[in-house]
Amino acid sequence: MLLWLTLALLWSPTCWAAQIYGRGGGTYFSTSPDPENEITGIRVSFSIFGQLMSIQVRYGSSWSETCGHRGVNDQEFILRPGEHIIGVYGSYKLFIRQLFVYTYQGRWATFGKGDGTIFSAFPDQAEQVLRGLFGHTGLLGISDIGFEWGEPPSDLITTHSGVTLLQENEHPRVPRMGRW
Image 1: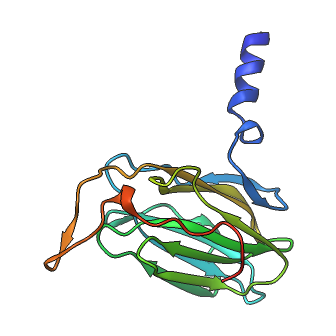
Image 2 (image 1 turned 45 degrees about the horizontal axis):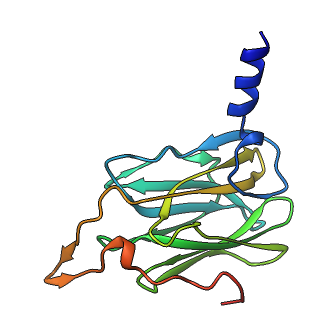
């Protein structure tokens, strides 16, 4: 019995080593990483009051399930072939208010308005990229969010329209401190 209790505690979201940002509470959600496809886009939905209501991640050409409840303002950021997200900034009050995603190609997208407590999330190792999201959601919005980092499904050089892109492990690092 003690073994089962220990295993249940270790697999609970509160014992994971990954950082989570926000006040928390509500129903747990996760976009499970696709072992064969990389993230190719992010879609978020906001309420009329500005809090993040739902989020989806696109793996290859398919969108994950909607995590949260649909809002009134939707925004999408589609990545270029071979492009990866290597950093996320954001802010929260009672709910997540803003997400700012940054790619190794120097492109970025801002979702929502930045007010409240500011956070930043980056992988521990240079070759890692965003592989998935997790957090908690309630009726009024997403109350906290975390980011799963890992190596891309492949480290092959990708070509698109005659342009050779950097290998994933050659992308430059973004400074962890400072404002954009």
